[in-house]
Length: 271
Image (cartoon, rainbow, N blue to C red; front, side, top):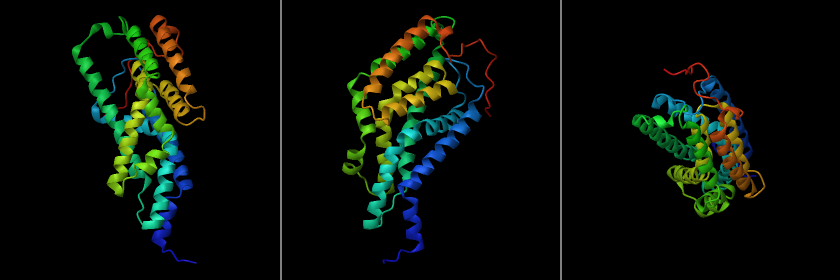
């Protein structure tokens, strides 16, 4: 029996897909608990101020880890398995966390872009965006736009990639740690292309809402992981369009939607 030194054995265990799966589930649970603690009582409905950029980035990354780790798990497990097999052949062990770092870098870039757009719109001081004016129509239109995007070719391409990452891993493998980070960024870009419309729900209905965060996370998991092909995408599209009309027509009757100004000013735990 061939002897493997303690360092090699430890490295092999680290890349065992079962270990990776357990770590991903544990990390997702921890991130949800941290997010709930940080965001409790912060939902002021549509137009909730995301705070200073440093605080926003920390909260956004935590939110994305909580929401996306379950849906990116199949890709991460496949990466860990391939990396482990390659390591056995040529000794190149690439930790899965490097791939995931690239993945969340792509989502961080999306969050920063959304933050910049929010600040730019606020600077314009467009009064018609106020909830007491045309806010419900704007929020409803955002949901309808997200629903329409579900039917676009770009959505289909990105979702196909996210649901079937085997070709990406086997055909586009990049060596080294820098290569793993680049793979993570590329996969994250496909994921952003797949899910940015669903994330628009958060910005339209309350960026700091735990309710809508849970709804969006569930929709993303259903699209990317559940074995129903593209059928959930069509159902979600119809639901988004109908939900957008509902928000525009009767926002006060939408369950889980906080009406801006109906509660005391948000008590944000920011520095």
